[in-house]
Figure (cartoon, rainbow, N blue to C red):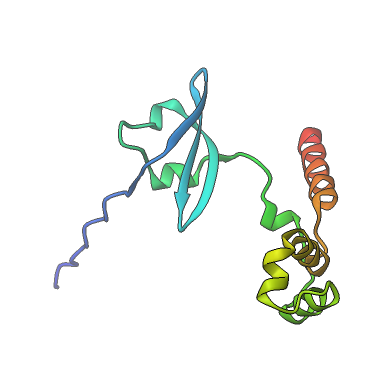
Length: 131
């Protein structure tokens, strides 16, 4: 009977983090993965000189609002094009001379503005406080 060859386990990946806050034995850290920033709470004991192992970060207690999970956007490129035209934005000159109008057209197309973001944030934090 042939012996099973086992592959050596890959070394855990060390991820650089920034420590944002220390509270007793807990730290709030920030790290970047695939171009996206994350924040989470970890025991200070897992914090190394050069970062934190990836599996420890995956187990971190998340910090902040998971925007992609709580906001909805019902739009398309054609809707954005329609809003840009309706706002009188037809040329590069129109766009460069009217940045606030561009922002308004984007908000209209996405149907997201500050009020909606604040409402969702308050609802999320209100639900979190009840838990």
